[in-house]
Image 1 (cartoon, protein in one colour):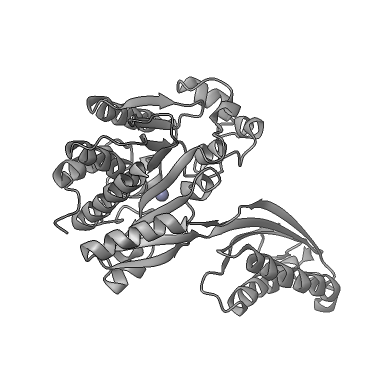
Image 2 (cartoon, protein in one colour; image 1 turned 90 degrees about the vertical axis):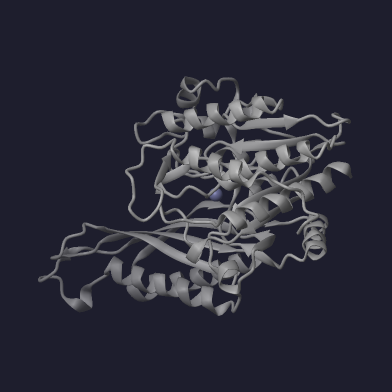
Length: 419
Ligand SMILES: [Zn+2]
């Protein structure tokens, strides 16, 4: 590992700890609790602090209309497409201190480390901090990268409301980010390469004792809402042969989802019915209406659709047999993303040269990189996190793993910027 670019591990860890103090989360006894909702005071303080770090380094700064931050180290050929890295610093309520932040502060340290080597990058290097990777406030994840990649209609985005019914347009303006959202979009091939450093949020690296994951594809979620309507009535008076119990039909539908997701035989197919709203929801009333929400993910969109087709056939059977209506609505369906084979190869070569054990893997959680794939060849570097835990105060990545991920990031940025 001696040939890898040296990073200032102490400084990076101190910065991660400082960022973790910019929160209003109640202290947790099992770790560091962080809550940082987009455009809250904590989020705005974190942005100001990050910009100060970048300015101290002499990097250029730009925000766009939705508040994505771009920290740029100009290359000797600044007109060439830049190489970029980054992640997010927002955090869901009572989350941990490593999700996203490792990619932002690790990216910043990687740039500083390259600067210390005396490198003069040919292509500019940009660090991006995305607005609202988490869906907490406006109900949709990856707001910043969706707008950047043209995946979300700007007018629809500006009308998204938070729980106080304030639209994004008003909230972002109050936070100091004005201008038309359409201006956030970047053209295809805007970046020469995009690479995101992130904690795995799964158990595989730790379980296998491997310090570094190279993401080859990102599974994409699709969301569906099923409304099942039957016939309600008194739990005593409505006789069993006469029933059209919506919850019984829903129970079969949930098991159908599980059955067909398992039947693909692919470890990358996952499907979850995570909510079940029962109407009227009384112990002595036959359920007349049930709303289910399904989250289904796969690295292969055809396979994901095949599961949905099988579920739909079972819905037809349920309609016939149980005399209920079932309405399916598509909430969202994003395309999966493949990593750039070239960047993956570069990362593998770095690991081989340096004797670092690595594992090619699929990202089952989605990230801003999923959307960046539309405007750049992407890749991701994963580092292990304890017990695979994330979005909880006991989320933990070791200093050694954070430092190694940051070194490999610096190394691959150096390669990419010279190409
Ligand atoms: Zn994240």
